Length: 413
Image (tube, rainbow, N blue to C red; front, side, top):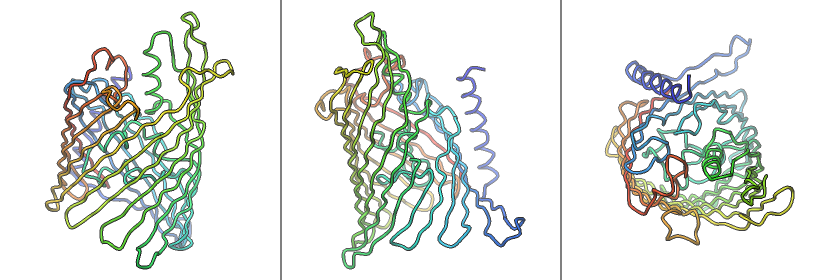
C-alpha cells in the first residue's frame, strides 16, 4: 500500500477512535508495582490523541494538498511517570504525528528523563529532556495547554518539532527568591540534537534542494546545543518576564550540484546558530496576554571536496514576533486572537517571499474536562514560511493575502 493510502487509512482510524473515546469517556491509568514485593508508588499513564483539518484558499500550507482540504494533521502521545524515591521523578513519552509530509506517524521518543531536586533552588534532569525556551516550547504537544490550534508559526512551527523539541543531555534548574523583587527561575541545559529524516528540517532541505534543477539533498547530521532560560516573577500577580539564549554548533547537511552545469559536485554546509528569545505574559482574572520576540543569527560555512566554497557562505539573520490575547468566558468556552510577523531575512523585510504575516482568531470549546474542540481562522500575507516545492511553485507566488481554516479535536486521559 502506498504511503498516501496508509496516511488516509490512519486518519480514518484515528478519527473513528476519537469519536468512540469521546463517547465512552476516558481516565488516567495506574499500574501498581506491588508485585515487585515493595511498597513503591504506582506507575501513572496518561495520553492524548488529536485529529485536525487544514484548508487554505491559495497556497498548500503545512500540507501539500491543503487547498483541497487535508486531514493530514494529527498527533498521538502516551506518557508514563514514576516517583520511586523522595525528590525523584522518572518520566517518558512516546509521540507520533503527521503534518503534511512531516512526521508521517514515525514513532519518536519525545522525552525520557530522570529528575532529582535537591531543593527549590537546585534540581537536575538527565536523559532526553524537553528544551526550555519561551512560553510554549516545552508544551507544544499539549493541546489542552493553549487556546490556539496553530501557535505563531514563525516561532513554534508545527513541522520542526524534532529540531526545537528536545536534546539528549541534561539540565540544571531551580527557583531563587529575590525578596521584594519577586523570584527568578532558571534552567541551564546542554546536549545533542538528533534529527529525523522524516522531520521538518529534512523535508525543508529536500524541498529547497531536490526541486532545483541539477541539485539534490543527501542527508544531515546531529549537532550539540546548549542554552539558558530565565523567568523573572515580579511582585505583580499574574506577571512573568522571560529571556532565553540558545547556541547550536555545527549543524551540517550534504547536497550535490551537478558539475556539468558548473556546479562543484558534493557540498557540505555547516551552520552555527544563536537564538535570543524574550517573553512576556500577564494573566488577570479570565484574561491572558502574551508577547514574544525571537531573533536568530547564523554563520554558514560551505565546503566542496574539502575546500572552502564561498557560494552560500556568510552570515544570515531572521526574526519573528507576536502578540496575543485570550479570554475564557466560562468553564466551556474560550476565545483568542493573535497577530504575528516572521522574516526569513531581516535585511529584506519588504519582500513577500521572505516574510509571513498572520492574523488569527480562535474559538475553543471544552466539551468535557478531557475532550476539546477548536476552530480557527487565519488571514495571511506573504509566503516566507511555505516550502517551495512542486505543491507551491515560486512562479505562482505573489503578495496577495490568503485565508486558512483549521479544525482540531483532542481527547486526553
